[in-house]
Length: 159
Image (cartoon, rainbow, N blue to C red):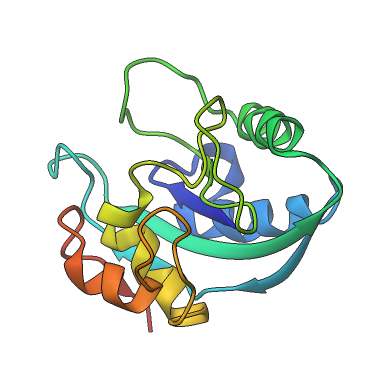
């Protein structure tokens, strides 16, 4: 399960276009998109004065193990022009490995993603796809986590 985000388009078009292109690119890199949410919008976090984000969640299948999958996601971010500077800086593309089946890992990559359950811009799109998905770490459903999230409370689907 992968969360996607963008608030800078650049040569790839708008953030919406970046996410659509990234979803297509996943299929060309040993990752098959099985289902995807609508695009969601949310204010930038932690600085809502920065450009608004577009977010989505994709359910994927892959033969890559978690470290290899995360490495491929980071390589894709780079191909889309992401420059890693300070945490939470604006970015052309952010790809986060949210969960990998029922796997729980305490080493890199930590799974499930340790902050995803508190972010409505992740749990909202996930709940749209799989409201009854159970987080292996907390035992809570995506639907419940979307309601309980404390970050990105303005997150909402784009009609």
